[in-house]
Length: 269
Image 1 (cartoon, rainbow, N blue to C red):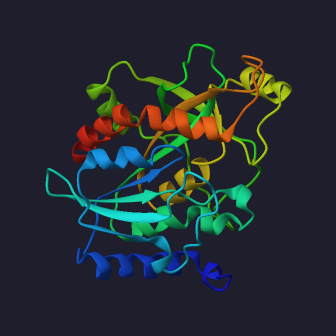
Image 2 (image 1 turned 120 degrees about the horizontal axis):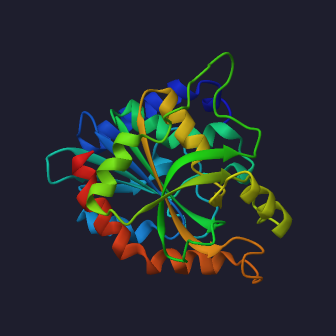
């Protein structure tokens, strides 16, 4: 596995070729990465033409986190385009390094995807947010001091979370809020003092994914849409303790709404 990540782009190209061979589709157009509790939302897209474990592809480790399926689906959308849906992801806190974290989106781009949709479960720092509320990410703050890019790869992140794609989604659901997401390494949740710090920095949401994937895909030319599902109030907001099982449950409870939204939006991207 380590040898594969010495050439992350080459490994992504190999994985993309394997997807084309398995699905019989020369290219895919859009990709989704489904976060904690979001997996059942993919069912709203209908029946996939193909579904298989990601471990059948070069460079993908087996999932280690509850609520993350470790499978890849291929769909034919209503407009005739092809969509890849990753059920689960690799997180930085799993200790495998940054390359496995970015591998899925790099594979998707090499498979032809021009648009990448990233979803996650997160803590709500903004006290206006309610549990079960989806929020579009308009910007982020990274507190991990880690990037998927290596060397003198200077990538502009001014429009990392595409304004064009956010406008398309808000045409379907004008009630959607937009917010700033903090990337926290984890796996420990944040302390109340850390949440207070993040709020003072202008953060609305906090989670343990999405940012490295967004940067890696954007660096390869893809447009990024990121949607957070507020599955709990962040530490110190309510005084209650945080629980991973509750995060999964809250995500599943909102899955129908999010699945229907994605089914409407994807063909328009």
